Length: 632
Image 1: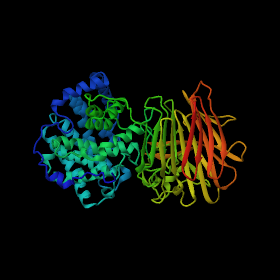
Image 2: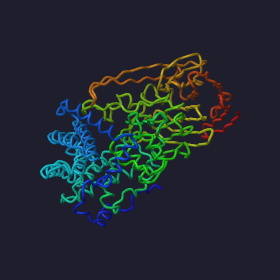
Image 3: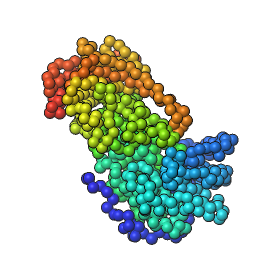
Image 4: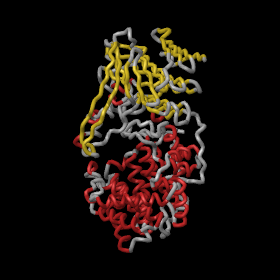
């Protein structure tokens, strides 16, 4: 299982295929014969093709009133061009073709390299523009005159494909040797662009070779269980741009060069399926915005592998995105998952579990893994929790990036960790002497145990290595009593007395009472009970709200971080925290009784009584085992 790589090398793939000298445009993602079916799909998904056209025409009018020359982000112009070019291909309405070419006129005089990435010659911006120019060349073929075709082709070759081919083959820039999203995005976009002019580019095969290598090396990096350690957002981006290229290459080669055969690509759709949350978003660890996985990527994987469960998710996420409309396969019936509601992604140190697959489900996400993964946060042993379809304990996830290196958002040696979403302060885990985790290859967490049953799940994460030698032990036990109760037991030990402090980030209105805390995110509420340190112990409960002000790529931004922390008042060498979290409906009284019934150095016994059941848990800290007694 550890050697799940594509067995055929790039040279073998290309040597076995004779590229056609000419194909009738469009051909990258659809042909002229497919247009009628595309129109029917739009009707099925959106209800009315005319409404889509009307909406896009309204967008054009608004954009024409704006000064598009002042748009700084060339990728935004590219996105507009994609939408208008697709609408033309779908309808033949020349207004959209003309607007697309107006955008190309602006794009061609701009620097395609994104400002934060300069002085690189090839970056994500160049790759994005190249892929869009390739699509415009393909989709507007019958509208373009010969001079425009030649101009777009020359732009592609001189400003994108040739710089890419030379830099990639000679390893002249840092992205040529990485295995994260930069490599697959650049190579996938360039491969797609090259395919758009395959018979008119004399270095086509050499360029394609670099594209295939770059995309497959990132596919190789997917976990054996389908996980992706950059998070769901960069899975959507990095794997997604690779899949666009894979799709076009399969079509152009009539299946002779089929990278869909990559064994890890076949399973990675389940990473998105399992990290999809009941509120139509995702478990957003690392630099991941709080939004759902890519709808069109899931639709394409569902279609290619004929997977009804991925199709279920694709339909839930349906959109008017051009790629979704292209890749969604209406002939594939979806099926609500009857899969196990839990999954361990061991390679990346992530576990997820839910009470069921409904929109009202409870959901638990638990994160360990490497601190040095691309776009990683210092979030070892952090968790999120949902109930009744609402998030109650959250991860801050993505904060907007800074526009230049001077503000240090990606300075992993120091300044990245001043942004609280990236540091331990942004996560539901542990501070030691007021200090969080440390970035480095030797600083990581791991899943010690993940045991699942219909009634109770037991997860144990080891986070001690993330604290740069300050800890001898940090074992976090999470016991998920389904459908909506958690027991957290945190065993922390150091070689000298230290202050241990747990953090909790509420998603909702925070209330305090004699029993503990309540978080309200209607219609759900979460009771948080601190059994250790208890009311009878010297303890500190803190409430903190910070606001960070800085210049981001979006302009001036303000980011908030609200959390509650609890710690023993005094420093100690060893401490065992016990926290109970129980969710209920806002207008119902919570029925939760808890107690510690027995405790020794190596064992702790707990009793938790909820509306549904009474659970006694005997936790053997040393042996990493737990016995449960459940009564109704």
